[in-house]
Image (cartoon, rainbow, N blue to C red; front, top):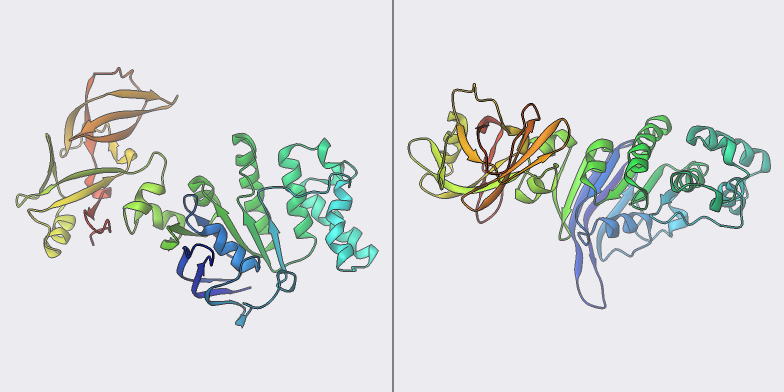
Amino acid sequence: MVIELKHVKKIYDKNGIEVVKDFNLTIQDKEFIVFVGPSGCGKSTTLRMIAGLEDITAGTISFDGKVINDLLPGERNIGMVFQSYALYPNMSVYKNMEFPLKIAKVPVDERKKRIEEAAEILGLTEYLERKPKNLSGGQRQRVAVGREIVRDCNLFLFDEPLSNLDAKLRVQMRTELSNLHRRLQKTFIYVTHDQIEAMTMASRIVIMYNGVVQQVGAPKEVYDWPENMFVAGFIGTPAMNFIKGIVNEDHTFVSGDLTLNIPDDKYETLVKNDYVGKEVVLGIRPENIDDNVKANINVCPITVENPELLGFEYNLIFKVNDAQVISRINATNIVKPGETVNLHFDLEKAHFFDVETTRRIR
């Protein structure tokens, strides 16, 4: 199913707040789309408008070219999995999965076939006679997913379904949902505030902030080429470092005691956009500040404020002109607080952003 949203808006009548602003997106058949952003950015509201659970203030939503703005949720042929499992506690797993099929008056033999197939896919076969109270959180979430799978929908919507699970179960369920998408070959739209979930599962990510789409792209694309500082800072763990400084005529970027040589192609872009002599923001990811002291350029001494040992690597935290900066290096040697180490700033993989607009300079 191809889903198209054109100039979709949502304004709540009670307070006049516009929570979704001019949302435009085409979702291709069988894509795994993830809406990601901080709480209150409009991602769940957008999902609920697609589901028919929220009215659209303006714009259109189409399924395979047909505008469905006025269709009731039950008329849209979608499956939806929420953060809460919403299982009937007095019913067995089998009965919970059977319930929507009974409502749809699916024949008994067909119900049994669909439930057994879904249970096999989700690893629930041995739990079909259990009640929800006798299942783990991950198993309950699988039942909630299975209840939607049996309906044989063309579109599946997920609203932060893993938020109630612990870290280990979330990793397991991410893998299971990705495998499920590949097996079903249906369109998935998934909402989360967790950028790791977005990066690991999505075919494309839709990054939202304050009701506005900031960027749409494949996980690798938005990670390597963020449109603005919000995207750059939101995607990636630890977040991208931001350092304010001046672009000089001698091809250098200077911030306090830090002086870095700007690669020719990036300097030409800064010249073209008239940033020489002006303040810009250097954006560089922690893994691009490394301990490659053999590099013949941009190796600088820094004083470590706090070394965070993560087992196989360190996060070295230090200051550049009052900005906190994080470097990620291999834990080959012990680093102590207050120690001076030489670090290489790989500006080939860095970006420059406009101070006022926060957009990437290109």
